Amino acid sequence: MYLPDFDYYAPQNLEEACSLLTHLGSKAKVLSGGTDLMVKMKHGVISCEVLVSLKELNELKEINYHQGKGVVVGARATHNDLVNSIILNEKYLSISEAAHHMASNQIRNIGTVGGNIVNAVPSADLPPILIALGATLTLVGPEGERTIPLEEFFTGPGRSVLAQNEIVTFITIPNQPTTGSNYIKFGLRRSGALAVIGVASAVTMEGNIIKDARIALGAVAPVPMRAKEAEAILIGKEYTDDLLEQAGVAASKECSPISDIRGSVEYRRDMVRVFTKRSLKAAITKGHSGEHLETAHSNNI
Amino acid sequence: MNKDISLVVNGEARYINVPADKTLLDMIREDLNLKGTKKGCDAGDCGACTVLLDAEPVNSCLVLAVEAANKEVTTIEGLAKGGELHPIQAAFIKHGAVQCGFCTPGMVLAAKAILDKNPNPSVEEIKEGIAGNFCRCTGYKKIVDAVLASGRNIQG
Ligand SMILES: Cc1cc2nc3c(=O)[nH]c(=O)nc-3n(C[C@H](O)[C@H](O)[C@H](O)COP(=O)(O)OP(=O)(O)OC[C@H]3O[C@@H](n4cnc5c(N)ncnc54)[C@H](O)[C@@H]3O)c2cc1C
Ligand code: FES
Ligand code: FES
Image (cartoon, rainbow over all chains, first blue to last red; front, side, top):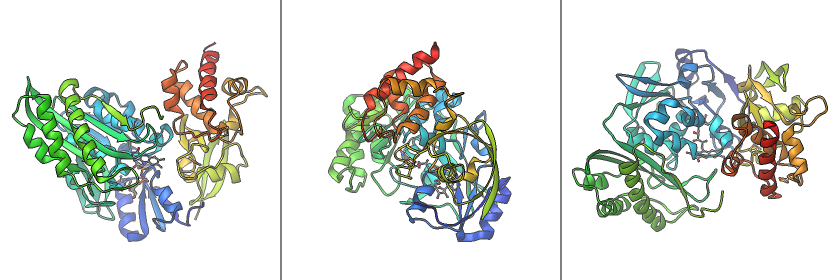
């Protein structure tokens, strides 16, 4: 397989990148890690005449903590950058672990968090945990910068509010009172498999009382979705296994999965029930941990 | 559109004029004539094209050659030194970890990446590190044995 002909630019700064994208219009696409773009271009699913690489924008590779803002993750940080970040390991191990269970080591060295988000694939592994933790996105275009909740970014499979000449620069996980968070990817095998479903949760506990809860589901709707009915069942109540079961049932009812090669509607709904419960339990009892990954055939690697 | 790039391949500085739409894998095989790096799926799934880019394993079929400019690439040809096989290569032979050999270059480089970070990995860590490398002859057991043994060898 060969790639179609295209031109390539690697602008030195964001302004140059945005003005190139504006000037070139729909002929151009942003290139980050390329793990998605290269495959789609080889298969002829996407065509474009020019790639604008973010390679030289080194500030977009950093993961920093800003006292007033929270944890700021550059869009070009690779999955392994998330896995290895000391800041994330300390504050939100749940994010590092979600990245750790993606794809393979090779892909984790190339694929980026920005690409994982902009792709807007319903089964993508990073959006659920980032949404559960209330992350915002910073988008930069020729007219300047805007910040939006990640939850409002997606508009459908492969679609988002990102304008053609905008670049995602940073993902911010705001300072917050949450006491625990967790993402469970349920896949058919341990490595290189997309999620059948994904469940992320973030909770704020005061003793045994659930003060606040956010649940985000992947691969069960056209976009990563909040399970707000399940959240409402939890908030203000004392934590019991029965309460978590009720939340799981609510989440399984409010999601809208499809049947495909990885699982049927019925199977996905039931797995949402099971893993919502497990994810919440881990968030409640284990802090910002990585409860991680479950497989249908746990012996397969 | 062609670009002039410079990069270091197996310790040697190279200057190459390469089309923007060429992958690192195709440049390595066609322009540098280093045929040890294999093309399996060409889509990131099989790991046969694994090379080290600035010491980290990547699928060279998913990286554009121009994106590797000013970086350091290690292919399987860069491992043996002065006619001596690298300890990982020697361990693969000793443990019978090579059948048809198609996955071997990628497997050895994935193993090198594991051992460079942790000379004494557990079986689980080895399995995780080579999870992106498919062996269609399915000799995984011996591959894991070879990596375990070469870890001990490298440690001395
Ligand atoms: C073998 C294999 C296994 C995989 N496994 C998983 C998995 O387990 N879980 C999972 O979630 N995904 C998986 N993926 C999908 C993919 O690797 C990830 O979604 C990855 O994070 C994409 O990032 P990238 O930097 O490579 O994106 P690219 O391919 O560079 O870009 C993807 C899209 O986003 C746009 N884009 C990228 N960055 C920006 C930005 N900063 N601003 C504006 N637009 C941007 C590009 O224009 C393009 O449209 C897998 C892919 C492969 C090939
Ligand atoms: S050829 Fe690159 S992963 Fe298969
Ligand atoms: S030895 Fe044949 S593919 Fe691995």
